[in-house]
Length: 204
Image 1: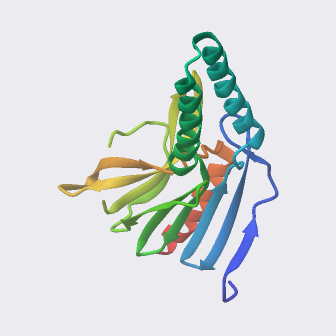
Image 2: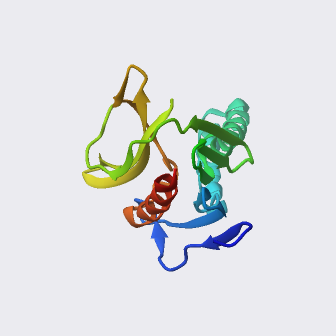
């Protein structure tokens, strides 16, 4: 492997989320033991924001026309602004990043439409294996990273997750940390990340 960062988009396939919306997957290889995966979703749709805004304001105007209460219009403006701020600051995630560092741990980050970022780090600990699992384990040192299966609106979906060790029993699983929960990539995208993570963990 060459020295220095290697940055590339996985463009050989088209990726979508579970709803069929286009997403992108990028991988940055910092070294043989450190890789970063970023799943990006579509930006906030200006057209959809305008449609919601018009619907709220039109409803408020109709109520105002009937009641002649000006407080209705003021309330509509406030509700619209507050709703938009909450959506872009706490709900709409533009990018989700998984940084895996062999022998150290995994960092999971989310970047919101407002620019806010949230980051969690989980120590690697002892990793037993990486597997593709079809069961949901209701299970912070890492035991495993797997692709789990769940049922979503009568459709089988897959998600990448980290299985955490039970401190009292190293062979047991205490909890599950799901990854890419906002972007919700389909299986072909998850497999790319899964295989690359497995390559790193095999060297540890």
